Each structure stands twice: as C-alpha cells, then as structure tokens.
Amino acid sequence: PFATAWMGENHGSAIPVALMGFDLLMCGVAYFILTKSIVKFHGRNSKVAQVLGQDNKGFISVVIYFTAIPLAFVNPWISLSLYLLVACIWFIPDSRIEKKLVEEQA
Image 1: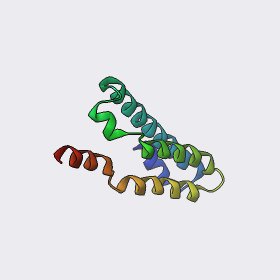
Image 2: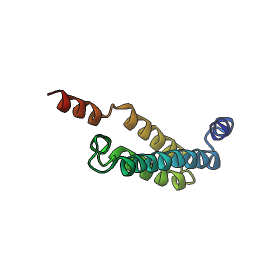
Image 3: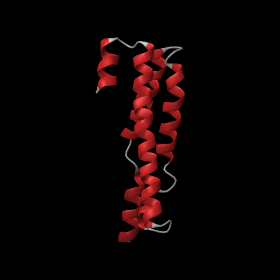
Image 4: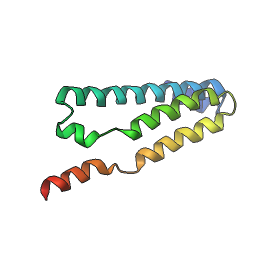
C-alpha cells in the first residue's frame, strides 16, 4: 500500500514507480519460491507438480518486473506499461489445472 500510495501522490515519478516495481518483483519472487517449494515437498511426479509444470508465467513475470525497475528511470510510463502487461498475462486463465482435471476424468 505504501508504494502504491506514494506512486499515486507523485503521479508517476521515477523513484515511486521503481519502488512499486521492486514491491511487485518481491511478490513475484515469493510466488516463484512458493511454487518450487510446493513441488519439492510433493515430489516431481505428484499431481501438483504436473499441474504447475514449468510455471512460465511466474518466471516471465519476474523477468519483466526486473527489467521494468531500471526502466522507471528512463521513462516511468514504460515501467507502468510493463506492470500492466504482467497483470494482463495473469488475467488470462491458466489452462494447466483444467487440462489436468479433464485428463483425470477421462
């Protein structure tokens, strides 16, 4: 909330946008670590591991956030656009879970 409020108060200044990117990056890294830990706990051949697969969306999100942070100092609107891109990527439903459920029912 702090990074979002600061960014809103400063209307897209470079440092608040970069801080927001760092906040998003840490969330992405936490999610990435969480999925890897769950797969490790349940085993690579478990249903959870099969559903999660390679988790390309999680990895791509982290890369985009990492790229967007320094770009905030070039042009904050580029970074904001990249943050929006990641949100749009996650808005598209992940079909891995549905495919696995359909396979099990067949």
